[in-house]
Amino acid sequence: MFKSILNFSNRTRLFNAFLRSQNRSLGMPNIFIIETTNHCDRKCDICPHQSLERPKGFMDLGLYRRIIDQIPHAELVFPYFLGEPLLHKDIYEMIKYSKSKGLYTSISTGGKLLNEYNCHKLVDAGLDHLQMSLHATTQEGYEAIDSKADFEVLLENIERFLAINKGRIDFYISIINIDAGTKEWKKFAEEWKKKGAKVRFKFFTDWNSEKEAIRRFSHLRPRQKSDIYPCDWLWTQFHILWDGRVVPCCFDYDGTHILGDAGKETIKSIWNGPAYKQIRQAHLTDGSSIKLCAKCNRRKKPWYELPFHIFFDASLIYRLRYFFEQKPRKHFG
Image (cartoon, rainbow, N blue to C red):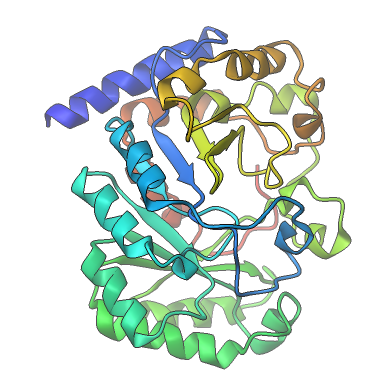
């Protein structure tokens, strides 16, 4: 109860700064995306990973622990970003450490590594939420995204995980490649629901990419500047690459706009440091001066959503999204 009160107090300070157009945050970020590795075992056409220019590596366990030690106020921790977290030899220790601090922890996997050993380790680590990025409901649909992976093997891996998990980890199958005009998706969702998995039809935001292979699955409508700026993520979320560098958001997958270094600075000093204040101020005036943001089509949070993000824990809102994603929609926003 005490932690819930502290988290609510922190959220009110976060959104107070956002709503009052202040470039200095009055609270601390309540959502953390921590890239444990940017190595990946899949080659999906829809992912910018294949054109990644920054070095690949694995976050040091010591650095991960130092980060977690600084964020008791966090409500939602994602120990992954642009890579397969199960490739990290210490991922289970990382999950355990997050959980030992009382932090809701979620990862996403491509599913190729869901063998019996890894399934047991995930359950034993105490993971709260696991998303399996299957992307499609059929072999044909899947091959349009990743022609190199075996769709049937991935389905077998899901079956294995469900048998071992027994409902302990909240498990979702994520789908993006779907024709909303067909009913095939409905049968797929119903079959997996009976087996203990939720199927979410996720909006794909195309990473602001210019590549047609990625953009063809986008569910975002082009937006006017007034619909985009300021971006609430700059007042609520914190993104850390595997080497400790801090970026504004997940769209900066190549680390082009560095706001600090969690390996050399504290989270608190970075959060209200000069670089963060500068990018927030740019968003308060226009935002187009930041190259990364100028091409972004992500909508800013509409006013009627804000009360939910102030009054409710981020992990609860994250789970509640499923109720709006139980069937495909043509557009987001």
